[in-house]
Figure (cartoon, rainbow, N blue to C red):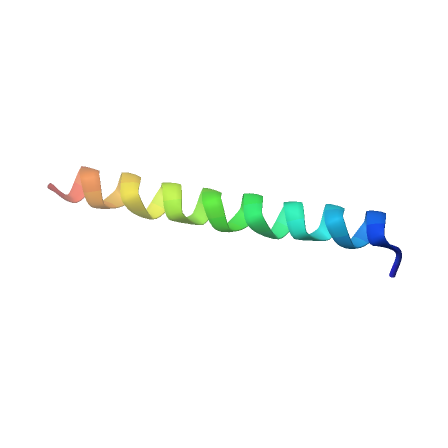
Length: 32
C-alpha cells in the first residue's frame, strides 16, 4: 500500500470513528 493510500485509509477510519462518536453522543442527548 502506498503512502497516499494509507493516508486516505487513515482519514476514512478517523471520519468513521468521529461519525460513530457523534451519533453516540447524539443518542445520549436524545435519551435525556
